[in-house]
Amino acid sequence: FAAFEKPLEELLQSPESGSYDIIHCCDGRTFRRYSQAQKIGDRIIGRVWSFRAITGQNRAELELRAAYEQLAAAEEELEQKYAEQEKSTVLLRESEEKYRGVFHAGTYPLLLVDCQSLEILDLNAAAVVLYGYGRDEMFRLSLHHLSAETVQINNEIAGRSSEALVHFHRKKSN
Image (cartoon, rainbow, N blue to C red; front, side, top):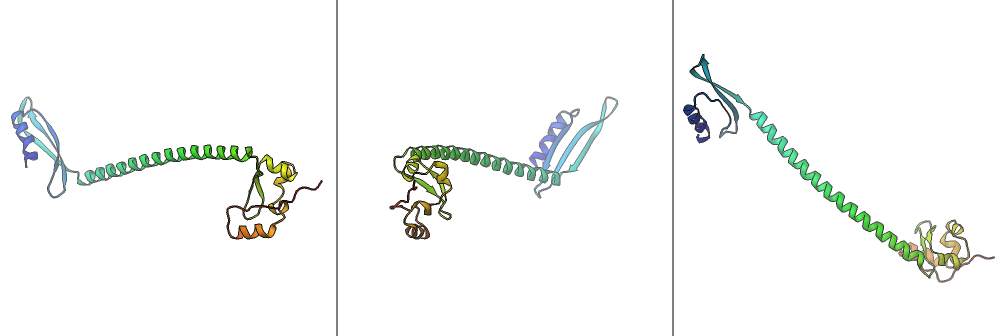
C-alpha cells in the first residue's frame, strides 16, 4: 500500500497539483492512475480520479522488451561470429598464399590431383620440367598419363590415401 498511499499524501499537501503513476497490484494486474483537481473558477471543489487497466499493454511491453533484448543479444552474437569468420578467412587466405608459394617454388615435382578423376588441378614448374609437357598441356592430362604405375595408384586411391606416390614416371616422348 505504501506505493499507493505516498502519492495521495503528496496530493493532500499540494491539492492544486495533478498526479500520474502506475499501480502494480499483487495479483499481477496493472493500472494507470491519473488525478487532477476539479475547480469551479479558482476554487477547488474536489478531485477527479481516472484509472485505466493496462495489464495487457504492460505485459506486451515487457514481452516486447524481452524480445528486443534477445534480438540485441543475437545480433551481438552474429557480429562476433562474423568477426571470427572474417579473421578465419584472412588466416585461410594467408595460409593458402603461403602454401602456393611453397608449392610453386619447390625444386621437387609436385602435382595436386583430384582423387576421383585423377585430373591435375595444379602443378609446379619442376613437374613441367620433369615430364616435358607444357603447363597448359599438363592440365589436360590425368595422373594415369604420367605414371607407369596405374595399378598402384588406383590401389592407393581406393585405400583413401591422401598421397599417391609415383615412383616410375612416364615422360613426354619427343
